[in-house]
Image (tube, rainbow, N blue to C red; front, side, top):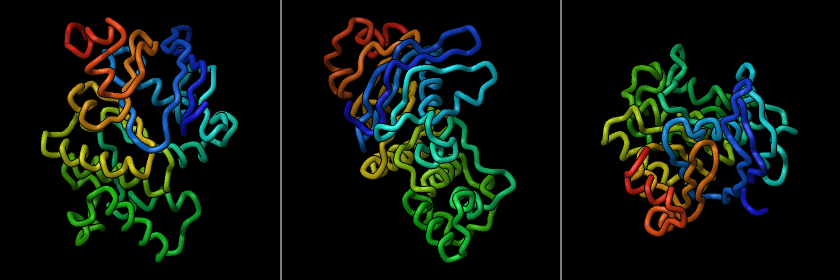
Length: 250
């Protein structure tokens, strides 16, 4: 196996319903992997399995392995997994009662960073990396929920990277954003991929082509095809993939 994250024989259930079937794929260090496929094919479940969020759902079950640098994530404490594998959700989720500053500082504080100078440095660095600092620098004490939708999503990205994760998971991060905000988040992904391994679930096929280096096509809980993005979209090996990327179903 090679890669930052190695998925080996992953199966997942909600109660008795199996939703992922024997997934095996290696996600390389740095760069962006897009996960595409029709609604209900297991994309979000797959993402949630990578950092053990699926484990928290009543009746949910997983077998197989997700290896982070060769270590099964199920052998690690959940807090360590979430610190090393951050996640940004479909809808911006700033902590409603917290300021911009406190939203970003929450993770570092949870991991034991308490000196004000250290927190200031972590918050500043994260907001800069998230492309938000210049827009909020004079008002970091404002509530995070006072920001626009696109700014809130970038705040959530800043919050996720404040704990210095190695992997960043993004579940439809632009689906609730307008085209201008979407373009800003896509530019941000292009910058962040030099530093993090990014896995993004998206229904937006043009977006997958723009932002990703590799693409996995899921169908009915299985990986149909996983290759370089240009190969998946321009020269797919499977007829099912070709039909999907050309808009014939889904």
